[in-house]
Length: 382
Image (cartoon, rainbow, N blue to C red; front, side, top):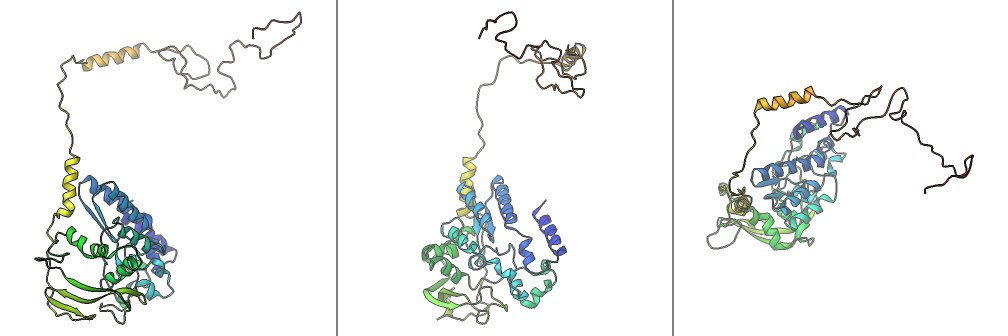
């Protein structure tokens, strides 16, 4: 059964049981399904000698699969997102339908409250490499398309505005990673993977990186009332985080000044991402050379070769059929013939419905040792 077929079948079962709310979205997508999908993708990519980028790593098992594959030398990259690093799936069970539906995304947030910290540990240790957001926001009235059927709830949450602060709070401020690793997982590594480094992801002469002046000690409280995203709900609502951008310079223009957003419409521009990044495909090339099929050069065989014609093979089979090995074991037992060495076939059964035993007609030896039989004491040989 494919992953999609499983999800469809599981959804039908939950709906049939009357589970129509957002909690059904998570229940029909267990961590085992995410783990299996990640493992299958890694296996196929490895056999095809292709790099693999797994987005939205949301569970411990799938993260472990990626970490294990990387230790085995497979070229795979894992991307947890701000939502999975900053909150968990317990919100799916909130009594408020609007609150629960606002957290619906795929793969779903996991109910295990220790998952965000676990994913952050792997991110800090480079078992996972980059961070994203899967930012795709819907207002409550749009989410309400699935008010009676969780399969119709539009998938997506916010994250793009709060990603940096969430990772700083959960990663750097908590002591799991240093500021250099923070820069790598939020900027530099992605620039290398998508082949725009060093134009992006680096501050140097000739580079064009966006420059962020970051205050790691400043705090702010995340809220839908103050964020700049076009959505009426924030999944990090009420969370106080350390790490605030004070100034942002892009293309020579200051787009954030003392924490105030000052974006000029039309200022942004498309950044092409050429394929075949050396950061990724350099390892693929090295692996292909290391795993190149090996041909053994040897002297050709010059000895005799036995050739058996088809007619000769038929004659051999005919002789065997004309001279079958007939068993000398008769009676009600069905026995296969003796082996070619003349021994009894040990796979034969000695069971009989009549109660007869295979060897009941053989002479019996007395089972009792008699020391003083009538007529005198016997002489034992043992």
